[in-house]
Amino acid sequence: MTTFEKWLAAGPLITDGAWGTELQNRGLAAGEVPDSWNLEHPERVEQVGAAYREAGSRVILTNTFRSNPIALAASSLEGSTEALNRAGVAISKKAAAGQALVFASMGPTGKLLMTGDVTADQVRGAFARQAAALAEARADALVLETMSDIEEAGLALAAARETGLPVIVSFAFDSGRKLDRTMTGATPEQAARVAQEGGAAAVGANCGAGPAAFTEICRRLRAACDLPVWLKPNAGLPKVVGGQVLYSETPDEFAASAVELLSAGASFVGGCCGTSPDFIRALAKRAGACVSS
Amino acid sequence: MSEFGGLYDAILNGDQKVSVALTRQALEEGVEPLDLIHRYMIPAMDEAGKRFECEDFFVPELLLAARAMKGALELLRPRLAASGAQPAGRVVIGTVKGDLHDIGKNLVSSMLEGGGFEVTDLGADVSPEKFVEAVRKTGAQIVCLSALLTVTMPSMKTTIEAFRQAGIRDQVKVLIGGAPVTEQYAREIGADGYGGNANVAVALARQIVAAAS
Image 1 (cartoon, rainbow over the protein chains, first blue to last red):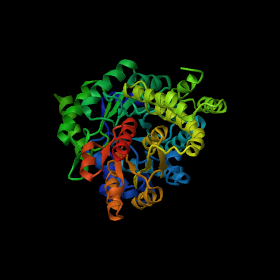
Image 2 (image 1 turned 90 degrees about the vertical axis):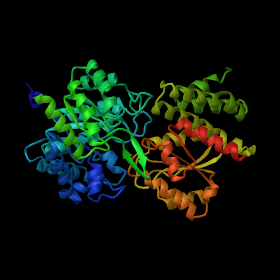
Image 3 (image 1 turned 135 degrees about the vertical axis):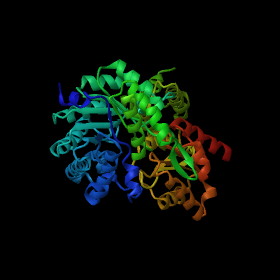
Image 4 (image 1 turned 60 degrees about the horizontal axis):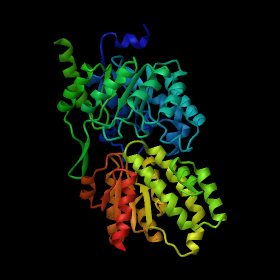
């Protein structure tokens, strides 16, 4: 049994929710790169991780979603790639306090391979550099999140696997009439194939839509490969209330449908945009009730 | 299609090298620029748009088709200008302040250029002041604002307010778009339109120009 299988042996794990909005509640300005706080305000970043651990997260991520050197170059921070990633893991490990696993977050480059804006070598090199720093700081696993392009995901997966850590690949299905395609048109079946062929430890979906839409995505991912499934839906769809953009579901509504994803066979369930520790608390409570009933 | 039917295919398949080479050859053989545009180029972009609508094309295919169109159009532009032809309209586009995402904005920008618009692309993280300055400088009739994050969407509102304060709100129509943006949000912040995708953005821009002329 691999380490990864051992983690799941006792049943599915509740992960965490959104970090960006939690950091904004603690003073992060709009437009500021959230990851820069790993060096500037590590104690506030730690508060977010600790809040999720206290809410019931058994896996927490790291504040390193944008710490890919290609993405960091947009804000001239690529020179801090190693420092930001290492600090991100150290902060989350402290927040986890031995009660939660720390999976390190890796987001897309933000550039398209297909249009020639970046080369495959640049993409592979960028992910390898980030993954090496995250592994050096002893993350438990790596999570490639919010991926759209299966080619970029494949390159990122190969680069991340060089660390020897388990790697999860999670896609954002936010396009197409049924919200079952990524921005570049990839289907759950194609995503599952790239994950399985690339040796991922799990395949998943995050962002995109609310939890209700994820049941079908979960079913399709599971039918297309035999990897464990990782799911982090948004808190419904965004709507405008008094000039503010809010997600439409309450913690209870979210938890009621998210818990269905566990019944649908997901191994990891948490939340993405619009979720907070309250959402995870509600989900952990319902999930606990399901297990014991 | 005649001997330059390959131009239609090159644009639809997003092959900029071939689209440019065929356009150059056509010009050398004395084919009228407007003939190329109306017989091959616009129909190719219309077909690309249709394929996008029926989920045969996604963002990258559309972006490549728009770039192949743009490459061909650049060759034609000097001749069109010499013959007194005007662009379809002038547009200023950018991702609003605080937001670094540019894939969607680039797509809309390329599609507008492919549609014959003269586009001033200000890039990402663009301050309201920069938008105001660009509108003044270019005399644009249309401004397109993009945001991918819910937290940067309010910058769209502050940009529209900056147009008002600068006294140029009535000179421009403001179109907004981006994953979390909605029609309702456009109404709430006083934008003139919302495009759910790049096709819709081009259609809206054409409507605005048609209504003004």
